[in-house]
Image (cartoon, rainbow, N blue to C red):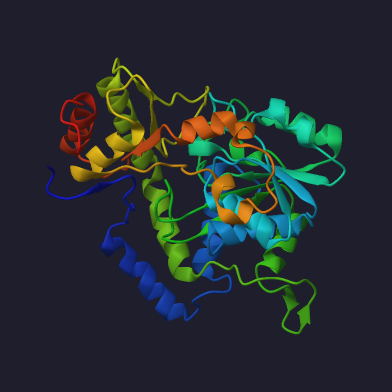
Amino acid sequence: MLDKPIYVTQPSLPPLEELIPYLEQIWKNKVLTNGGQFHEQLEEALCEYLSVPFISLFSNGTIALITALKALAIQGDVITTPYSFVATAHSLLWNGIIPVFVDIDPVTLNLDPNKIESVITDRTKAILPVHVYGTPCDVDAIDAIAKSHNLKVIYDAAHAFGVCDQNGSILNYGDLSVLSFHATKVFNTFEGGAIVCQDAKTKQYIDQLKNFGFTSETSVVQTGINGKMNEFNAAVGLLQLQYIDEHIEKRKAIDVAYREGLKDIVGIRCHTPSQVKSPNYSYFPIFVGDDYTLTRDELYEKLKANGINGRRYFYPLITEFPMYQQGKKETIAKYLEAELLSKQVICLPIHPNLAKVEQEQIVFEIRTPATIFK
């Protein structure tokens, strides 16, 4: 067993000595939040790095999702995926919106465009797809469907920081894209998030919404929320941005080593994303088939017993939680692909600080199923 537990993700921390000057400047400025110096610098730096026209920083990705739906005045029904973190669907319920779940494509693991139109009704107002594990959705197909039915598209891009396709940043698709900067993400500000939009007027409106709806000291014109990112988190983001390319390269090396170490194991399949010009290697999911010596849960427990804390990400499906089963009449077969994969998936540890010996131990435990956990 390893000396210390290994987790799926480990926060990437900037060097403490580099953070101290930022803290000193915050204390000197005496501006801790409400659009301070580092907040403004981070928005500008992220626009440049991500090749997006406008970005609005938030205290976390969930508040950003909730605000994005509010910004587009979405009501009625919204089509989304059951194979995601609960924040995706929770943001709909918080806005009084009914989530309509559609099965996923078994290759991309994203919302299956071929199954979207069959659930569109006169109540449908938008589509909320997720770039799962940073793999881009079929954005062209989703865009065509949205235009045909006059629907808005908001992408949950929590996993997709820095991801590009042949046309550039994946964040420039849809009406809005929402990022998470949680500590477990490729790029983090400890806690944080953002909304990417395409024009200055929309950004101004979003900025009003995240600050209670204020337009001046004495004028409130929208029913806003407090979603602002503070100066400390923005400073952390500015530092993290200096190391992001290095961190992604380290993740890439880990990804390559996993694929080499796990190849040809009967019953173990590594997720192979569709062609991505610039992936970010945010997760490393494997799928445990019936022909592997152990069940998925047996392998999960075996790894855990050896100090390796993988994650069954995403299990169970969102549709299995009680708040999404009220009045539910359809059978789980409606989400056949999502249900199957949710019962097979284990995300293995992948982060810039994962040591070679730790990764070798993870691969060893998977390759030697004779040491079955009991």
